[in-house]
Amino acid sequence: MSHDKLDKPLRALVASTPADQPVRLIVQFRRNSPVQRPALIAARPSAYYFNRLPAAAVELAIGELEQLLSNRYVERVWQDLPVHTMLDVSVPKIQAPRLWEEGRKGAGIKIAFVDTGIDDAHTDFRGRIVATTSLVGRSARDGNGHGTHVASVAAGSGAASQGKYRGVAPEAQIMVAKVLADDGSGFTSDVMAGVEWAADQGAQVINLSLGSDEPGDGTDALSVLCDQVVRQGIVVCVAAGNMGPGRGTVGTPGCAHEVITVGASTDQDDVAPFSARGPTLDGRTKPDLLCPGEGIIGARAYRTSVGNPLDSRYTEISGTSMATPHASGACALLLEAKPDLTPAQIKTLLMQHTVHLEQDAQAQGAGRLDLYAAYRTVVPVAPAARSGCLTSLFRLGRGSRG
Amino acid sequence: MSAKFAPGLQERLAANEASQVHLILRVQGDPAQCRAQIEQAGFRVRRAFRLVPGFAVTGPASAALALADASWLTQVEPDRPIHTMK
Image (cartoon, each protein chain N blue to C red):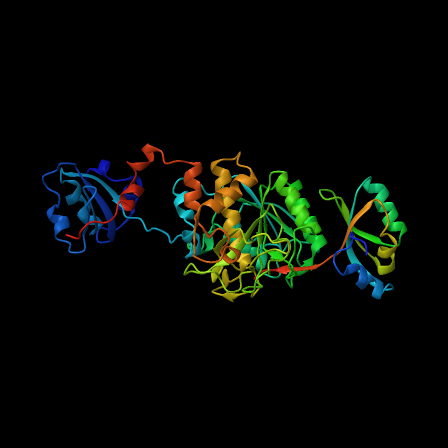
């Protein structure tokens, strides 16, 4: 058998698999080959022929590979590997997986979650929690579940779900300040201490999926602190709040001037009814933009039952709390691509690249985030990226079945 | 009414001067001197902030009212409850 035509994983599979075991393959033929449909493949009604490349997808028994490889018009054979679902719905909605394909997964970027703590034993965070503190107890353990879920939406690897529930920046470094007790509540001063800690620890993005229900004008101490942190070069993403749909319901610190205030959108690209609306007490438009925040599946902290648990590892929660880490993860990916972006530039980039939902600006802000569009203005398409790799083959579209 | 106080706060403090209250005080000037004066007024300092100079304190409402005219005190607001947004 001419194993030179097989890709490496397939070679290993052939060596260790019985001859009658079926395997899904992608077979590439020589360009300008007179035989585009070898008899072995043509005999399979389920074979699929790509129309932009001389190639077919087919299922054969391992034992049939020898016959296939002996065909001189067969140039290369890959195993047709399963493609993991890119989280459930929300992460593809903002087009984060398209950045992953270009190697942007947040590696080296520090996101701080100022929240109820984290389940540091959850598989989805393995090896990436670089700093923790508790301002409300002895440990940063998450006895509520909110902080764990939020962190996973921004930076979970999805390892416990084989990649299905993967966060926006699945390789980002994670910092955790527990500032809310296990009942999910706390005080402004504890949050301020958590934000200061995150800044001192070198966080590049701070996620605040929390707030008060009182509308604000951005002059309260926490909002002023958040603005100060932004001016020091740290991106701060804040939940708009869940007091919608009434007007003027954005609380503190969502009303802060310099932060990115995030409202929630639905799967149908509408504004979630609960998502807080502007204006702020001093008349400014908030939220700044929307991210998905309804029915978001993320990591479930051990022995917690927040939301609608799917199993022992994942749970579904709705809220602007869930929308906010989508934005934080997005900021991490942009910072990875272009580390010298300022918080103000990132905010502008995100707000300029949205899907307009035809709603009032005080409900949708600039619209629902389109991260890929924002990324493309930072990293224009390189001509070399358009050809040559197997991934491209899938993007070109599928041809007719033969 | 002093503009240093969050809207309605001064009235609420005055209505119950003996009550213990949790406040955030923003200050200007030497933080150590400010802290000393806050403690002298009868407050317990729970947290000190650096990026936005100030303190989270607990103490009698009357003490906050007594500090209203202190030149180093710039803002007084309640240490508001915060919660998750789920």
